[in-house]
Image (cartoon, rainbow, N blue to C red):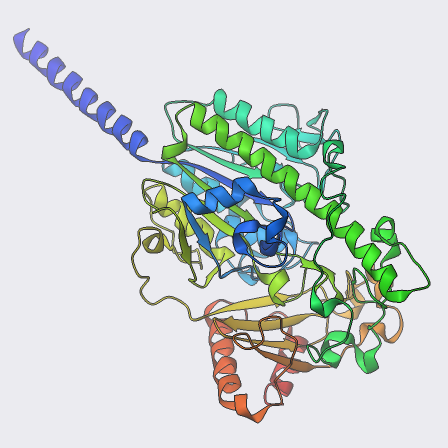
Length: 529
């Protein structure tokens, strides 16, 4: 009996040690809240400076930046919602995860980020805009918008409310408010034996710009500063950007100016007058005020979430990330929307809070892209990034250390040739000081496969033809990308080096277009132009 008693005591002791160890591990692991808006340009956040910084639209994000780390050089590898979100959750580039454009679904077995965090003991949940089409089954809980969803009184698809996609629940209020309230309610009722990972995805400030009525007076009497490149054509582009014989000039997505204004999409922002520049000015003021009212709603809700975390004593042990799925052209080059490799579209805001690791008020210029988010969060959670992820963890940067062997340039690809806003398909590479782009001007699907796609009608006539041309920008001396220097012999050596780097990355990242030989041939033919 004594032997049995001793063995039982030993067993109980082992269980106690194991339980204590697990509890300690959970206490040491931070909670993680990944907040992502849709189309929020970095230059529409006060902490990033620039012409809009004095409008006071993001006091909570500005405070978060002053308490944590603001990243200046974070870029998406494809400035469109679905592919960017797929890269964020997989840590992979499009030709690896299979999501090239808005037509593709992310396979459920590739929802890697929640899969890996659950292995590390996290409870996982996603709220708001999902936009990856398949059910987010690898989250313990979800409450997501169907497709784009609605701004007002949104319907959600909620886990536990039936079979996907019939598991609809109705709500009342503005989507930014409803999503944040749902996140807070979820954290209140969480399993407190586990650290939590929550993806908090706003629909805002994606168009249409339906802001909450309480923001109607915000900026009403304010003159919004306008970009200098809005009213005139500069040497920023080439025929590659504007189509064969300039055929796309009056079609490319534009917010103002003398180009065709996308009446179907933004007609409520366009107030035509006989004075062309006055008309453009009025349209721009209307457009930006509506956009920034949505931004203000996002920021106010982030303030509400942070106040709750502080009240509950969760703030100091919670990693908070704020980003957007891409940037947004806010009149620069006379453009609205995203898709382009130009800075305002390609750049993502990225702010991190974690007082246990990050010193306050840090600003960092590491060259990061959206495939790096998942590896970094996994390492913050106590794990190691799996080898199938192509991005890299930048946890050393968060700890104030140098990253070894980090990339010197980041690769970009826009696939949806002239489908939306008539933006031509292009590839490119961006280093800290330079940017090189090639407009190859062709859809990846052969013409016989266009039938049945909603965008087929956009391919009528010669408008689908665009030239194969290069653009190159010296970002140190031309940060607004107003002067294409590709044919300037002073930059020949730098351009050659960037081409070598682009080919190298296309090989290393499985971005060679092996399934699209016609595009391969175009790139090969014009590589030395």
